[in-house]
Image (cartoon, rainbow, N blue to C red; front, side, top):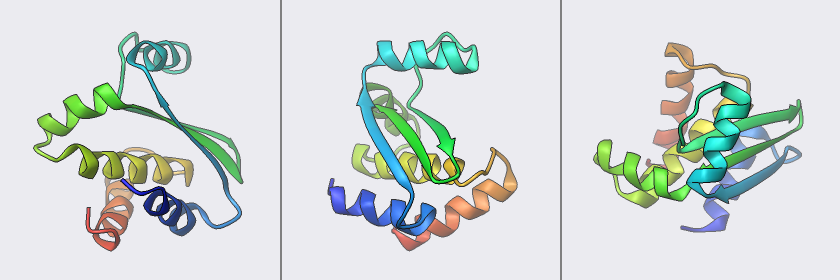
Length: 113
């Protein structure tokens, strides 16, 4: 997986001036974040946190991503990029629903994910 691909996705979805931190973390750490910020006491594959209109953070748990990739019948690398797009679209201000899915689909097609 290329850092350049993540940089391209970030630039196209969020813009070149957006400051984004991408953190790969453990199941234990992401579970703690999920509990603290979403009141869900389970690990998850991804969490996105907008810090301002021009900055945010994405946390991805590789072990949960591997599990979910299998559930969605995708390769790990493909699902990782799928999640990164999902996180960026959240940081763009979209919430789960039809509109978000259409926006994500546009970017998945662009990046062949």
